[in-house]
Length: 379
Image (tube, rainbow, N blue to C red; front, side, top):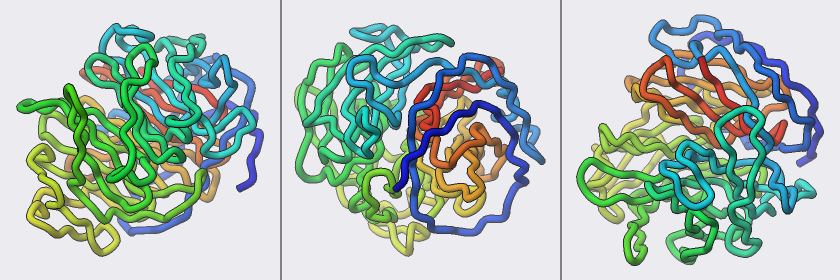
């Protein structure tokens, strides 16, 4: 993969209609490079044929929060992103946690730092954790209710757990972790909180139990993967959990799909298998899973964010025209909005997270790897 330096910050709408469904399979390309910081607000024009019920086209302002390059090691290529759920350790409630995938030389999969930023323009990153062994190649992270950090470390092939202050609590390694790629915290209405993790090597989904000790079990297998090296990984990722329906959403860039697993807390070890390139399901829990959406305009999606109304915003990485599209999909599996948030090289969108309880206060945060910064879409 060739690395690039891209200097831009103009925003344009993707003139994209609601495209017909048709499954694709493309190899990923996830570049990252340094770029000058920009702090001005941009207006995001709505995409063509935006649905009246869509939220994405209402978020007309795009604002830079701050650089994600950590201040100690200078690491780049922000992947994982989550929001602090409490005030603890290095975080105030509402702060953003970001992990870097590349080192300061921009070598894919050699980053090992986690930073925190306040959710306002002009924020500077604060180093929270750094671990060159256990956190190597961090692709995703999630914060629990007390801001304990679970991280998916692809290159280290493990799942380190850090306190909110950045102290290593434990390192989950060995089977069933197999090139960790996605991560999400889940607090069901009934039952204990858990973390779901996805693996890029075998397409499995692991449930991690949280308590005085940590257990794990594989609840699903067989999501499509491409076996790509760092910088070109595709497989189950962009995990989101909807507490209202006890549902786990799985984004897969290998077959351009979003799968919904309902009642995910009831799945037991080995009860769901994914077949036929992600289009069919087997096992005792097969009725729990369905393809929510597949095909265009999804194109190498890696990340997602869950909105207050149950809609999912998915981020592409493989647009051949150099667009970085966000696609809003409602709970019924219909595309509502498509916008382009970066007119530079494709492959800029990774971690995403949404906050807010209604359309007026929704904020959609995302990492932009072209600029190595954290941005937000808001009203």
